[in-house]
Length: 241
Image (cartoon, rainbow, N blue to C red; front, side, top):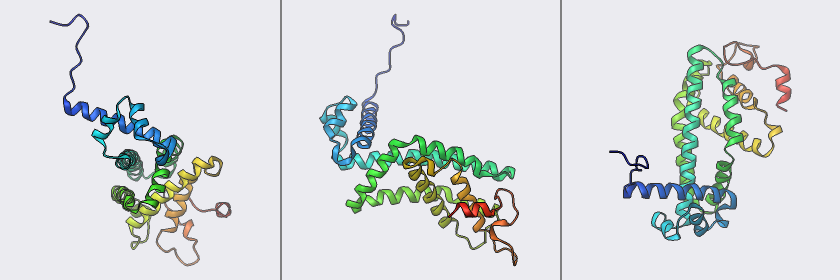
């Protein structure tokens, strides 16, 4: 027999309730750390914003440092997983169809740079925290190493596809690609006009063009044929100055 008020909500178990409380505290902390920085945020304010008491905060996190590290780790993990999945899909589809993957990356780059501003604030705050607290550097190092591990097989296939020299190290190229993406994204957030949507795609063409196997005598390294890598024109060279 059904209840007159409709189906009753299932009562959360103790573990489920604790997990929900923890998630809401992390979400609140992410907002406030992004707005006020590590030094300006307080556990009391974070707990109140999430709708909980300070006691609930300390029941889940021992101190502000622990909370901050978990917030950054969680946000970096989610964002990295989403981007790696997108990049992998773009490259796999392009390599399977003999298409150019770089133009497809343009839209992903623009959305990531323009959308993830809370994450960008958290990352900047965490970099400052890590500089002052060397032990926290390991959190960044582990996160970046994990991203390299995920992307390296995709980069290795792309290097082979675009005719890179056999002695090119896929892992080192992956590190450069991630630094390029992150650096351009930071610059775009500060000065959007300096980083148009297609700049990442063009930079990747320069990079992959330069990594190609040695050309024949008298041939410019960036002007060899091959799908997916555009020829480097004199005008493009001028744009790099």
